[in-house]
Length: 196
Image (cartoon, rainbow, N blue to C red; front, side):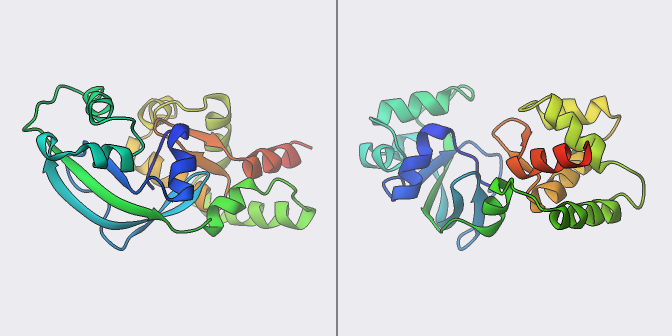
């Protein structure tokens, strides 16, 4: 999963944005990898390397969707102090299509068969103890709240909680954001159906 703010979506889709700079502690993507970026589809990584802030050019900034090099540096600075020697990940990428799972999340016209199929899959996930409906309803009530805060509310560790939300996302029921999640249109339609 690669997350971008809404202001970058059009540029990623039309190909004018082909770079992103990330302040990660370690690389989270690899060359050749395909990563979902809701709701625009799939992004493919062409290259990733560590660079120093001083190596970032005005051209890089434009390819990352910024008006100037300074605008990009200021944006990166919002995540903590940095100077010209600070190391940043430079990720070259391109839009790789819609991606089937993203499309699935947007499908909100569910037949009775669709609802039954989703229910069957969720029941399998609930075998070791029910969590799927509780998690969907938690996200529904508290959209875009950090996973750590949601996990704490249901007395769970953050990592397994996040892993479970990924399972719901694979069914097209949730979608991820830079902070937290939302119930996807498909998930909303499913909850409406089971509530009668």
